[in-house]
Amino acid sequence: VMSVDDESTGCYCLIDSHSCLLLLEQPGTYALVGEPLTEAAVKRLKLATFGSMSCNALDYSLRVYCVDDTPHAFQEVVANEKSRGGQLLEEPKTLLFKGNTFSLQVSIQDIPQFLWSIKPFTTCQEFPFSQVWCSNQQPLHCAFSLERYSPATTQLSCKISVRQVKGHEQILQVYTSVVESEKESIPFFMQADCTVTSQTGPKAFKIPFSIRQRICATFDTANAKGKDWQLLAQKLHIESNLAYFAKQKSPSAVILNLWEAQHQDTGDLDSLASALEEIGKIHSKSPDGNEGQSENTDLSYAA
Image (tube, rainbow, N blue to C red):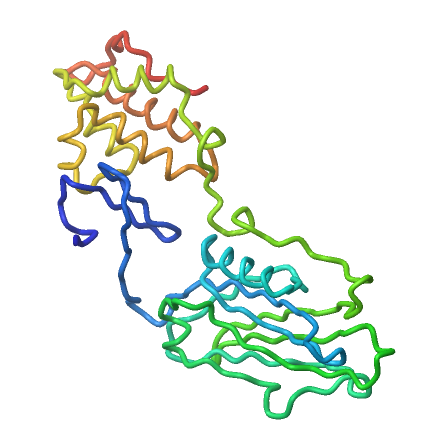
């Protein structure tokens, strides 16, 4: 157990407004635990609507899921729906759920009155704040049971409103055929649809190997001008828990690993080149303050 403010040589934790990055000695299972500092904090929810016919040929079931916006949470929903013959009726949407203690309401609207009926007292369903805000072992969802008056009715159209009291709202538009042969399936959205867009494996953003080697050779060993891995960390805005890097065989390599993880979405080598160029300018000056000849090591590493 550690606080993000603690100095630790066992792991490195960096939290920004979008993500939490962990550098670890070995793989394992870890939990990130925290609480909002203000009511302005939000939790990202993924909303999805699935439908399927019931045992009675005239009945149709709509199921609305409100789950954490993570790949694992939605994959669990997809697996469950596939096993029961559910069809994804609308592309999933994201709702920002505020930490303001107010509940979440899910309601069905605009049902064709003369074609369909809905089970009484279920048009609006509500989840208390704590049930939504806290992580759930089971996917959070509710169901609407509809019945068509005639087998000749083959289309269903309606709206699903998901809104937080004194918060945000999303509308899921449903338009589907309840006749099996006429259905147009919307593809199940797996991990690539999540807001976590970082690539892994061979597709991951990487600093070119030759550039990485030159940076490590330059900064791993301190020199008289103070050009070392601590300066590299400072210029890359990685300035906390330096004790973690100090114990590494190659502090510069670990710093670059963290920088790569931070920039997976953008693959922005230009900002790395700018930081290295700034270091080169700082150390191209002689001790008396006059411009002197820069060191032989070239710090312009842009690809």
